[in-house]
Image 1 (tube, rainbow, N blue to C red):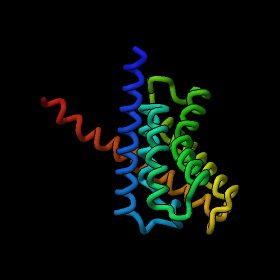
Image 2: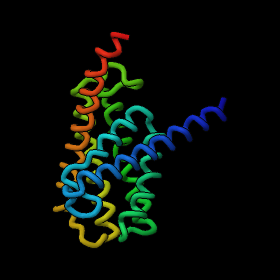
Image 3: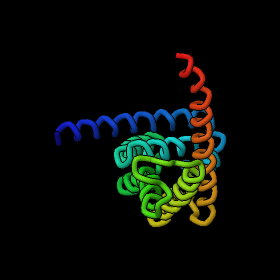
Length: 186
């Protein structure tokens, strides 16, 4: 049974990595104009993917996001190398996972997603956006990433992640609502 769990986790990590990478490429294609500086956007739609992937698959989603973010950082962030690249990728995946852990600890989100409410999802998006911006900006400040200012750049990242997560979550909710009548007819 242990081997099967390992395979399932590897598949979830791979799927999460691919979905997150595709989400980033779509963001880059459609919303590059929202970029404040490389890696910081005023609107970041893949933030919603981070939230959903971690909400649905837990640590597997976080690990997939870390893997995809390492590749994205390598390909798109020319100033990131070594520890800066790896820690930035880790911040990308763990922000949502830590937010989920905190909200489960406080009883806002139950294990198994039972009784998940719109209020809980909004709280998740808010806590995630705050943690993600703090993690990224702290790492960049500690490693003295060129062109970043902690007090200035934290706000566009927080706002971009929050807006992206909310738009993604409500877009997903709308899509599921519109799909329900079709499913009832079948």
